[in-house]
Image (tube, rainbow, N blue to C red; front, side, top):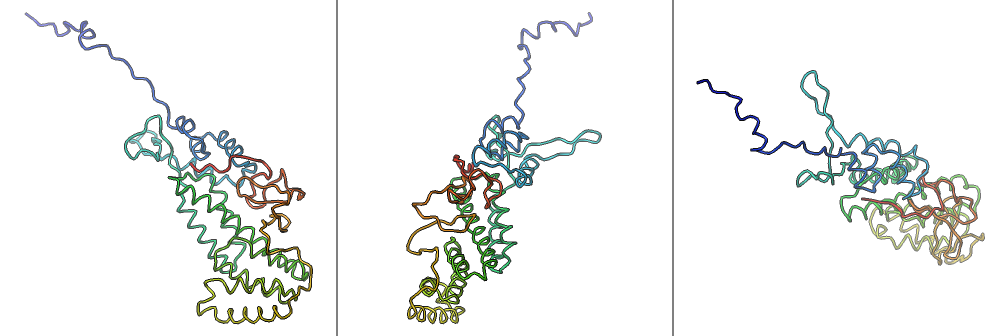
Amino acid sequence: EEKDEMAGLQSVGDDVGDFTMPNAGRPPAACWATNSSHAADHMAAGAASSALQLLNRQIAASNFDVLKDSMMSCYLGATMSLPGVPGSPSISMPLLRNDGSGHPGNESLPRSPLKLKDLVTTLRNGYRLFQGGKFNDSKAAFSKILTEIPLVVAANRAEANEIKEMLTICREYITAIRIKGAMSEAASDPVRATELSAYFTHCNLQPVHLLLALRAAMGTAFKHKNYIVAASFARRLLELPDMSSEKNTDLRVKATKVLQKSEQMARNEHTLNYDETKTFVIDAQNFTPLYAEDAKVSDSYAGSSYGKDSGMEGKLDVTSGFTVVGIKTIGLVTG
């Protein structure tokens, strides 16, 4: 008797259970924008509109042209393209930063091409250029860091703190370089030249760079017979640790002579808008001291300060070039 091979087929469903198609998963880009409040993650997901909104809300960013390269890097660096079999299209694969212990599923977050180590490399280059007197190139290096910091995702709290410290360093060096440029323009004005050289020494610079600032300020003040401030700069110069090295012997001798002569003359030839005994911040627009009692406005991103009557409120910060002054925000989000 011939066996029916199709016999019993109708009862298969009852014996093994009906097959159910699994629910479709969420695309990675949708997860990235949902799981993060960092602009870099939204940009990686292609959500440029929400990325710009986050930057505006968090750091009062307004001029996004200077951020274009960094933002495009986030978008292009979050995926890779794998070639398929001949005749088929390439496969786009997401690159994740939290898949070390397995695929995170709906909790996935994109990998970012902008890293802290890259910022450190650019920072060191800025230091080197500053030391070599290439101030425009140095300023460009520090400005580049400012455009990349908002789109760097910190891996931990230590990195977050380092990024915020780097933000302060860039602000101080950009301000110092701008003051240096103003000093050249005011060379014929003994009062303004002395004031600017004094403010230059109050930028928070590396000790080796502060030495250069104090040497210049001491020479300018002594040249214009402002002996009180010249003595102050000479004392600060002699207190620097680097002054004990053999390579600074000549400068140490010169500073000692300036100090002795200034203490003998003990007068300033001019009335200066500078009081070394009081703590102040520098108006980033007008290069004047702002003391604790002075009304001021600031930038929520770089932290630049301006006098209340400077007219800078509501305008772009001269340090960063893309954030608005006078808007109180939560500040930089690092991860």
